[in-house]
Structure formats: structure tokens, C-alpha cells
Length: 569
Image (cartoon, rainbow, N blue to C red; front, side, top):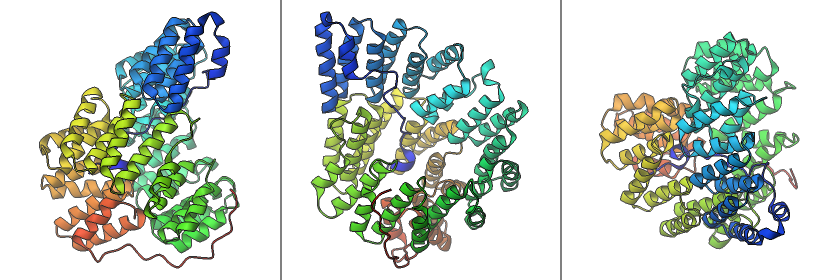
């Protein structure tokens, strides 16, 4: 199966840019003699309300090409980006630049369109041109592009790029962060060392270096850097975070307990302690820690989400729905809605479940698309595979060429048992986006999972690993294809490291199966138990454990405490 969490492309952040005017302002700004274009704009906005992204993007492009107004070209670009119409977005951005050649927002939009399309050579050229504009700060530009287009394409653009403005200490520090977020720890270390040599803030450099060393499994060096980082209040969590990445959870927990009373980082330490308790299946302790977090405004939404999750896992669906419902308007609203939808579906209220996931009529295009993807995914995992594929096909017709929807279609086809169609879809995406490591990895993994052309599957996965050599998803893929090729001794350390870096149920399923096949059954059961505690929702993990060790289960959670009254966050 294609693993949703680990093997899908990173979801790029595609906001409607602040530089774009509202529709009402656009209609007021366009002269009355352009009534035809005004009607086209109104039609485009109506299409957006229906979720017809392709039509909206096309009509905005039509209006933009006939009116020499930068704000109209900006709106056309924003709509195309939000709808995943990336080729159109680049054309619209170039129209915007033709009308406003020195507009930094237009430059950023064009680079964003190129990055999300993995047109890396063009993006590099235009990125260097953008840095040449007056008062442009390279570190800020890098952060903005990573947020807009995603870490992976931004890092792929930067890798190997040499420009004078990138040599400053703060910029090298930003690049180190980008490389670490993009799962390239050795590159992060090189940038961190360059930042240190250029005079960047020592504690900040050490914090990044500590995490990078931990990703690489270098415990002693990670601890040494963490001690340096702790000299600054922002770096006091570095040791605990590095210990977690190293898999030394007991030591990390002791360090976090020590930091709980720290006025600067105590709240974050409390959140990490709650997460540890959740992932270990110790729900009684997790509940106590989450209730204590409710008094902190910055921690309350996460605490409520965790409390809802605990209630759901204990079978108390009504308390779970209550808690998830309180997350409206917070950063956890989307996760809460997905959990509520799952509960409603299990309770037999299928229509209500889909309605919960559907975006409102006035939602932005990307929010509507996320709602469609979530609804299709829910239908698929709940056994309505054909309906899920039909729904995603409809979404793709309304947003033709959207790569995220196309990828999700491959996921649903594979889940529906249509492996040939899923592989064909991924092959098409790979031809369109050969430099996209996420697509390359997904194709290689899917071939391996279905025992198709294993030498090519390994080659594809190794290509993806070049782009993000420490990515647990890709490490898992490589371990899995080696397992499929009966190279157990090579597969096991990769799968173990992948699970250490990401406690994902699907990775745990693969690791345990490889251990079991190698004759290490006790180790396999321990791996599965650990994975079941961290990710009991993984269908692959559940089926794998049932196949090999049907009597095995995660540690039983302790009884619930009295639910705390929660009326708001």
C-alpha cells in the first residue's frame, strides 16, 4: 500500500497572497468600460465558490491578459497557485512581472510556481535575480519560499547554489535550518559550520548542529552541541530534543521534567512530556499532563486535541467529539474535524461525516481541496474505495493538473486494489516531475510493495534518498525494497533508524516484519508493541500484527480520570 503519512509529497503552503486585492476591490477598481472583463471576473469568483478551480484560473487569466492591471494579474496568479494550476500560475506571474517589473511579490510568486512544479533551474535563476533587488534579505526570502512552496523544493533549489548574499552568517544559519527540515543532516552541519565561521549566534548554531548530529546518530557530539546551545534560553530544550531523536526517551523525559519549571521553556517541555505519554500509550499520565496544560493559552489547543484523542482511544466517542469540537478556530481545527468525521463514520452517520470535512462555501480554494481530499480518504479507509476514487476523479476534473489531487488518486486506486492504475498514475507524475523526490520515492515504494521490478524500485528510492538522505519515509522505502529482495541484514538497520526518526505505525509494521522474518521474533513483538502504542490508527500495522502475532496488543491504557470541564480554549 502507498503510505499516506510517509510516502506522499509534502503539502505546500499555498496561501492567497496578501498583495492581492479582494474581488470587490477589483471590481470597483476596473473602469466601467471594461464591463466584459468585470463579468469574467465575477464568473471566475462564482466558479471558485463552486470549487471549479480550472475554470476560475482560466477566466482570471483571460481577464488579466486583456487588462494591463498588475493587481488583476496578482489575483490571477494567486488563484492559480491556490488551485494547483502551476503552469498557469507561472504564466500569470510573468504577466504580473511584465506590468510591474520590480515587484518583489511578483518575483516571489513566479519562483513559487516554478518550485512547486520542480522547475529548479528556472527557480535558481529567478531567485538570484530576486536577491539582487534593493533591501532584499536572503534569509527572509528563503524562509518565505519554504513556507509557500515547501521545504523539499526550496532546498533542492538552494543545494549547490553559490551567491555572495548567501555567505553571511545569518543566511547560512537559515540554510542550515532548511537543510535540517529537509532531512539532510550532513548538509545542515556544513551550513551550520559555515554560519559559525561567519560569526552567527553561537547558541543558535549549536542548537541546529545538535539536532543534526542526533539525526545522524552521533550521541556524544549531539550532547556537546546541546550544552553549548543551552547557554541561550532558546536552546535549553536542545538536549531533550536531541535525546528524543536519538531514541533515548527515558533520558529525554528526565531532562524535560527538569525543565518543566523553567519560565522560558517550561510550557514547551510540558507539551513534549504529554506527547511522550500519548506515544507510549500511558493515557492516565497523558491526561494529567494535558489537564495541567489547559491553563496555558499557548498549550491549551494541543492539550484539548490530546484529551480528545485519549477519549476516542478509550471508546468514549461523545467526550472525544466534544473536545475535538472545541478546536474550531485554532491551529488544530482540521485535525479535530478529521477525528470527528472518523467517529461519525464509525457510528454509521456517513453523510454527517462527509459534511464535517467539507469546506464552507466562502473557503479559500486550497481549503476546499483539502476538504475533498480528506473526505475521499475517509471513504477509502472506511471501505468505500470505489466511491472515494469517484470523488477524487471529480475533484481532479474541477482542478485539472493539480499534483496533490493526482497523487491522492494514486493512493486511492492502490487502496481499492487497482495497483496497475495506481502505478500508471505515479509513472505519469514522475515523468512530469522527475526531480520531485516525494513522487520518485512513492513510485519506487509502490513497485516494491507489489513486488514489481524490484531493481528499478530500488534505483528510484535511492534517487529520492539523494534529495533527503535522512528522511525516515525514504529510509523505510529503501529498507522495504531490500527486504523484498531478501537482503535482510541490509534492510534491518535502515528500518530501525527510520522508526527511531519517526514513530509511524507503517514503518513499525515493516520493521517488525523484517525482524520476524530474520527469526528475531521477540524483537519483532517489541517493535510492534512500541509502534502500536505510538500509532494505533495504522491499518497496515494492525493487519501485519494480526497476520504474524494475533495475540499481541499495545499496552492496555489505565482507567480514565474524571473528565475536566472544558467550555472554551
